[in-house]
Structure formats: structure tokens, C-alpha cells
Amino acid sequence: MSRLQLVRLIFLLLAAVVRADTVTYDWQADWISATPDGVTRPVIGINGEWPCPSIEASVGDEVVVRLTNNLGNQTTGLHFHGMRQIQTNFMDGASVVTQCPLGPGDTITYRFTVDVPGTYWYHSHNMGQYVDGLRGALLVYDPDDPYSEDYDEEEVVTLSDWYHEQTIYLSRFLLSPQNEPPAPPGIDSILVNDVRRNPHFHVDKNKTYRLRFINLSAAASFMLNFEEVDAQVIAIDGYNVRRARASMVRIAPAQRYDILVCFTDTYSDNIPFLIALDGNPDYTNPELRPRWPLNLTGQFISDPDAPLRRNRDVTVWRPMDDSRLEPFGDYRPLSHPNRLIQLEAEFCQDQYNIPRACFNHIPYVLQKVPTLYTAATVGEHNTNPVVYGAVNPFILSQGDIVDIVVNNHDDRNHPFHLHGHHFEVLDRPCARSGVWPGPNATHINEYPPLRDTVDVMAHSYVVIRFLADNPGVHLFHCHIEWHVEMGLTATLILGPEKLRGLDIPQDHLDSCRRIGMPTAGNAGGDLENPLHTWNMNDKPPRFHAG
Ligand SMILES: [Cu+2]
Image (tube, rainbow, N blue to C red; front, side, top):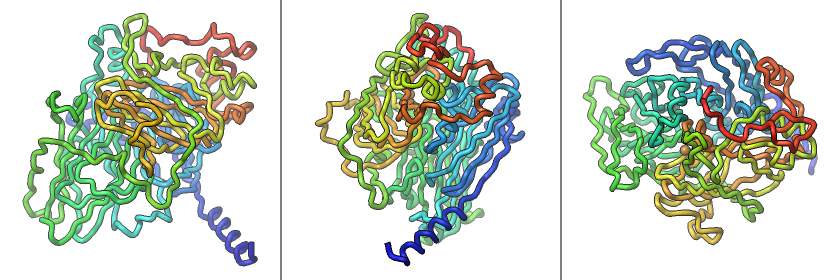
């Protein structure tokens, strides 16, 4: 290295150190009353307000969220969806996975570096609770954003299904033998930026806008129709893609799409676009006569005095194929996978005739000790899946290149999310393609896009690939929140050797003690005999307590 190169390197390192900021939020989660769609109901707000505020930071910043649970009647927690949590896996926020549920009256601090730029969100990862409103945008700005010159202004647009009853009651019925034939709760409403109203965006001609769409739904995907404007996708789930025209887009729960919308002088003054809830079992199957009963018409308004037009009726939805988007820049795809995890996803029933959702015939069951705390405390036994109990555990080595195959045996789409990583979408064929034909399948994307949530079509499959470079305990689950409650979750224990003796923040451990949860030992809390399974939760509970 020449002297000049060395000076440059030191300067760059210093710049990186100086630029990093700490962004602090002091948040009290509380029940408050809200009326987003004409019906007043209790929602979970932050510091007395709902919709919940956004978290905003620049890449490299440290984010600190001091969370106090003022709910009184429920535990809580926060997950930062899409954040990798490198070396801070204990800040991932998933209840009974990387922390204990935060008890009423208690406070813990989340502290982590935002290492990936883009559009993300945060939400409770505890007892289906984000559906009651505890969710918001998490925006990580990038000083080196390659698209920064291509737009003038930006706006966050959240989409959500909405329910008039609280999640705890909806879940109790969902997880009861009376839910026959098994069905998810009915959706009462749709919200855009947490209100049911046709959204109006005031725009200037000759300007380009970056719209950051985030689907906060419990269950529903959204269809967007931008046929009348020049709309192009530039990022999915925080990761930049090569620009692609996006006249119709389908956004599954937990997914994000950053879309550039450009207005020229040749456009009419006000332009409609359609936002429709997709509650169809399989919208690709015309025999099911798919319908989109809940929808809103957005307007891009450049002249408030000019008339508003209706969107044309969309009779057939043909959303762009997101699995065929290409990563931006010179991304080098992973090759030579050395691990394969194959998951058969389907609905199942437990011994009480309660509907569940299973991977390989087994529903995920919450344990007595958070899985990460087990990995940290059972010593050499932590490479043995037995110690983790019925959490669908898979042990991975650091450096593994892992292929996950999900065969979706259900007649609905399911959006699968991996914590702590973005993954390549190698193969995501259309509905009714059947099960994965094996490693010689021909559709493999040679230049696959990266996502953290992939929508798997009805009676079809997906193949994703990722580099297991982030030691910790990472969930892989369907992001339909009702299916999480039903058990459609697997647990990846990545690099267990690195997790032995892990230093868990003291306030997190103290919060466990205060709600009476053990912080050491196997899934059943047995520290002396980690291979003894007698005290673990081997079956889901008969009565849903939340
Ligand atoms: Cu699902």
C-alpha cells in the first residue's frame, strides 16, 4: 500500500467513525383509542400517539430504543424487520427466541447498528400483537444511494389490513376447535398510512417521487395499479434492484417496494392509481373467480382545481414477477451450496382438533427459555437440536451456503421471512407448479434478486439461498401473522459455537426474572441435564393465553 493509499484509507475510516450518529427513542407502548376507518377501537400506540412514529437513521448509525410496556394487560417487545443485528442478535426482539416477553410496567433497551440502507419496518414480535397497531416504518438512509439523483422527493406509504376486534380475541377463536373449517379472521377494512381514505399525493409536474410502500398487514397482500403513470421499482425489501417498469405490483405482508413515480408535462393534471386488497386464496386461478372487494383510489394531484378521475376497472391482475427482478450493481451470486433445508408447509391439527400450521408435520411451540439463551448456556450441547425443543430447530455452521426449499401444499400464497439475512430468490414458479423437482430444476435465476420476505405461490414452491454469516438464532416463518400464531415457524441456530457464553444485556435478563422466566438451560429450563426433554413444551397449549 502506498503512502497516499494509506492516508486515503485513514481518512475514509475517520469519516466513517465521525459520520455515525446515535439516534435515540424513548418509547412507552400504551393502549389508546383510535378511529382509522370510522370505527373506534383500542390500538397500541407509542407515547400516547397512533399511528406509531417512524424510526429514521443513516446507514452506520446506532439506534437506541428504550421501550416501556404500559399496556397493563399484555407483554410486548419490538422486532426490527430486515435489520441484520450483526453481533447483536439479542436485540432482534422476537419473544421467547432472542428475549423474554417484556412484562407490564417493565423497560428494556434495544441498541443496534443499522448496517443496511433502505425501507424497513419495526413491529411487535409477541403474541400477534402488531396487528393491534404496534408497528411503523424504519427508514435507513444511504448517503451513497445510487438512485439519489433520480428523484426529487420521497414519501412513505404504509398499507394494512385492519380488524375491529383485538388480536387476542381473534387468536382465541382462530386457535380453537370451533374454527372449523379452519379460516383466518375476516378483514374489516384496509388502511393507507393508517387511515381508510382515498390517499391524495400532491405532486409537481416534471418531478420524480420515491414512494416507499410497506405492507404492515396481518394477512393480506395488496395489488397496486400504476398503469397511468411512469412507475419503476428500484428496491425490494431494502435491496436495490435494476429499474423495472411496475405498472402492476403485488405486495405481500411484510414486503416493501420502493417505486419511482415520474410526472411529465404531457400527463393530465390529476392521475388515479388503484390500491386493492388481495384476500383471494389464489388470485392466479380464474376458476376461483377472484375478487378484490376492498380498495381505495389514490390520486396524484398536480392541480387541485382540476377534476379527479376514477381508475379504470382492472379485470385481470397481472403483477410484475418480482422473482425476476435483478440486483443492482455488480452483485455476485452465491454458488456451491453445502446445506439444504427442505420444509413442507401445510395446515395440520393437534390432538385437541385445534387447527395449526406445520413445517414437516410439526407446529412451532413456544418454549420456557428463549432459544438464544439456551444456545448461550448449555455449553457443548448447543450443537444438538434436542436442547431447543419443538421449535423446528436447524443447526447451521458459520459460512454455510444454505438453500431453503419450501413446498407450499396449501391453496393460498404464503410470504416467508428470514430473520438476520437477505436471501437470493433462486426459483419461485407460478401457482400450481407442484413440489420442488429437485436440484436439477431448470428455472434457477442466474442473477437472483435479494429479499427478506418472499411470497410463495399456491401449491408451488420456492428456493432461496443465503450465506450463513451472522451467528445467532434466526427465525424463518410465514409472515401471515395468523399462521405464526398457528405454528408456521422454523428456527435456525447459526454458528452455535460462537454463541456459548454469549453476553446477554443485563436489563434483558432482568426483564425475564421479573416475569418469572428462566434465562438458562435447555428449552425446558434444565441446565444440569440439557438433553432431558421432560420439562419442555412438546405440544402447543390447549387454550390460547396470548
Ligand atoms: Cu402463511
